[in-house]
Image (cartoon, rainbow, N blue to C red; front, top):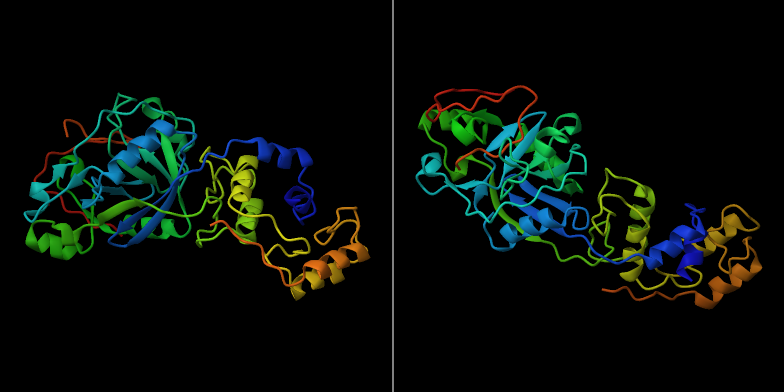
Length: 355
């Protein structure tokens, strides 16, 4: 029944084969993680299917708590913002230590380094050297990073309003401490300069990175699976740049993601002509406004190709029903297009304030 309902939505006209393929697709579900940072939360959907090794690698660090208490140690406006590599104790930046790393993960290039994507950082000249460090792409870096050093593996994409937080981090003033900290974003530039050191209270901390427990098919991240999630899928079908409805993490919103949504939701009730998961007066209005139509078939409840009296009878029979819903020897990089000169200056030896 849900197939016929899909085929008569205003999207309409999705070929039947797409819906049939959706049923046949494997229901592999992508992972959504939340970065809890000093400046707010960043949600991201991981590309479990497209980059399984990198995703598993990242989740190994996050689930073990090794990202907890790390900080954003590198930020280059218009390019990338990077973390996952360092934490510090009460002695400040001078005591920064590296995250304990697992063996490097094999490179999995293929998804483009567009704005909003998350990619693995690695050592120059070694495509398979990624360990714990990752970066947010602040711009379309595909021309540079998709080919550099074997291509940088994109393993996730920021969703929702998360890029607002990422942009806030990128807008911070930066200081140089040499080595991995030549572009260290700080919350209060003048205070850091005055004290001659940077402490946890001065940097953007990653308090935690946790996997969100959301129902499969919850594409608007509101905790339930309903018609609104179908609309997210419908509005982004075919997209490789919007990941909210990429339910299986293969890098594109496609028929398999529709199948995941359907698996997370019971069928619409007969007569639910506005697809809001209940049958009420609004559905009657949909029928009334499209009565006689052979083009707008949202209220064609019996799927005979026209909105007619039989569809009104279907609505009357189901009126009031609501269906149930299922519940460091090297510095990982990418490099900018120009040569990156890694200084060995002491903390604040080079002072810089960004606009």
